[in-house]
Length: 291
Image (cartoon, rainbow, N blue to C red; front, side):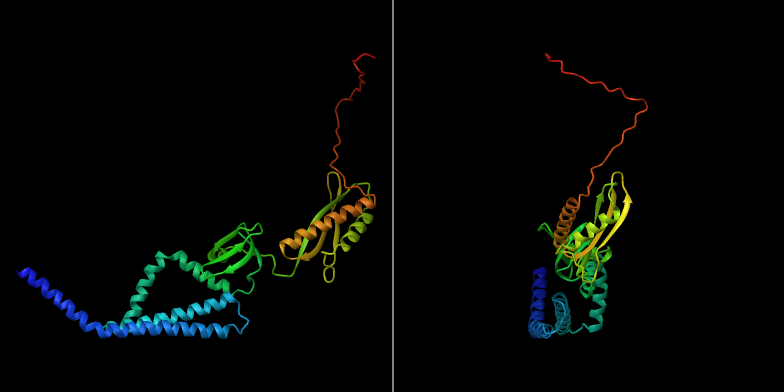
């Protein structure tokens, strides 16, 4: 019976210890409850305050999250000290330091994306609504979260990109400015007067509604002697969104083609000149049919 008595004694000791710690446990639970209430109230107050500022919604969410994390860390530390009187804030911080190293190695990518997200949120260059391109991903920035960003492609597909990719790779922001330069190549035949062709193309561009001419002039330069044409580099400015660029390019190409046709200027097909080493004998073949 001795083993049974030893087991019973141990169970009694555990029960007495649990009963003895009940007041401290109740206070710790009360502290956690107060922490939750304080976190909710502080988040609501901060959200109301930040809504009156010009901060981006993503930054407001970040500040709200950091405030909640800070309040919860403080509340949990206080509850732990109450529940286990032998603990001190210094020992808790030391334990957190050792644990954070292990957690850091285990969740390296998660923390990398988290820190990259914080840096991206503080950037002024990339905002929600911008059209960007990064690592063959092109589209509209629909949402910037702490660990990932949502890119809505022009074909309707949503791409969720880890923030570390946007942080470590070059990002082209196509809508950083309101205007964007567009270039097309227009070719005319070699028997065309170059100055006349340039004037016709410039006049055609100036008649397009999508071409911005108030601050940025239209530019038409003779670029090169191509295999069957003289090529002009035609450059103008339009809206920076992809749909603006496509719409403007469509209007300009149609207007230049129409203007060159009306002026009698040929847009040539490729010509080929064949040279034979020996003279060719031309023979005429008649019909093999009757007569």
